Image (tube, rainbow, N blue to C red):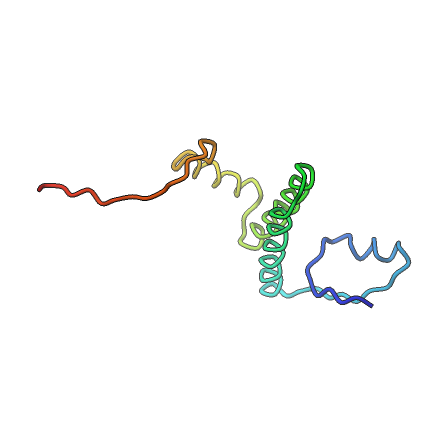
Length: 112
C-alpha cells in the first residue's frame, strides 16, 4: 500500500472507496492542519512552476487558491475578506500588471 502522509481534499476518501481500494486517514488537529496547509501550498506552487501548458498552470493555480482559502479560514478570514485585503493592497501599492522589475535603489543625499 503506498504511503502518502499528506493533506488531501475532503472527497478523496470517497473517491478512493469508490475505486474499490481501502485507505487509512485521520483528522488533523488545528496546528497540524495549518502546518499541512503550508506544505500543501508549497506543493501546489511547485506544481504550478512545473506546469507545461496554460491549462495545467490554471489547474494548479486553482488548487493553490483552494489552499489559500483554507489558510485564510485558519486565520479567521473568509475568501471575501482575503479578497478585500488584496484589493486594498493593490490600491495602496499597485498590482503586478506593469511587469516592473526593480534592479536597485540608491540613497539620495539631502542638504549637501
